[in-house]
Image 1 (spheres, rainbow, N blue to C red):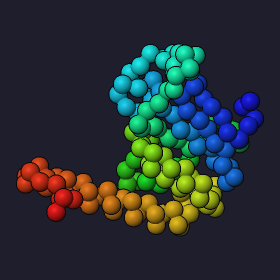
Image 2 (image 1 turned 90 degrees about the vertical axis):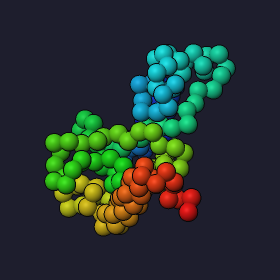
Image 3 (image 1 turned 60 degrees about the vertical axis):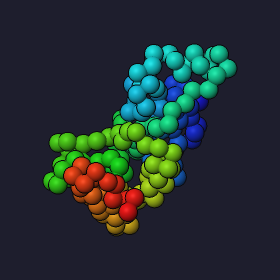
Image 4 (image 1 turned 90 degrees about the horizontal axis):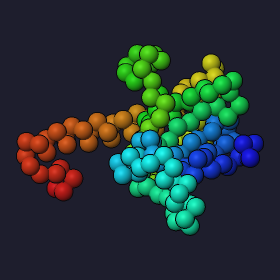
Length: 161
């Protein structure tokens, strides 16, 4: 079944082969970057739940993207979610996986990954629309970070005003 475009993985997530040549992996289970009770569960907990006709779930999931037909596992940066860490854009420090995404975050990740197009070097980060979207997301994060720091001093939430 590994040749199918949609696959269940280890009873705790799924993979989707997108039409642009990227596969998205969404996982929520023991060892993943998810809710603590789910992350710390026994490794066979998802299978035991399914074997007992129960559902396995989490409020958060981790996502990653890679080339569907790559030679080995070749990660794809999804701007605003995964990719190089730092200003130099080097691969020295690289996040391949983004964790603790809620349902909307997972949908946003999949949507953004589905819009990626390779640039001249085959790197998906060169898509101008994606770069503009990344700047918008990063600006929103920066604003939230700035104002959340002010909350520590004022004792109020800036979004409540």
